[in-house]
Image 1 (cartoon, helix red, strand yellow):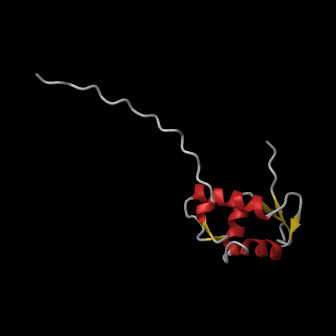
Image 2 (cartoon, one colour):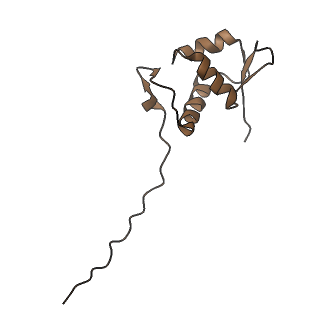
Image 3 (cartoon, helix red, strand yellow):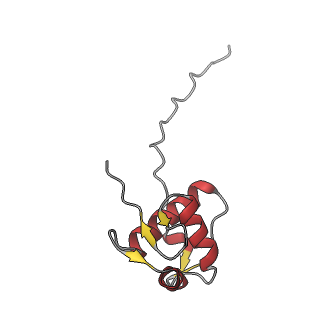
Length: 103
């Protein structure tokens, strides 16, 4: 006589919460700029919030100095912040500003 057992109920996994960015840093320094777009966007959001005040203009040297506090490749980070729309830049590149979003 064969016994058939009912399949085990599937356990629902809670929705994954996005990882914070703390694992990207060591001793306050960014270990590497993430290659994956979603992770890089998390990092850029964090950098925007922590390094740049809303309603303030920054010169390019000020932006570079702020970004160098976390990573030496400030030009790559600056470019990512611009292309992601988190910082805006005047046409002549003389002034940068954090983008504020209204929700």
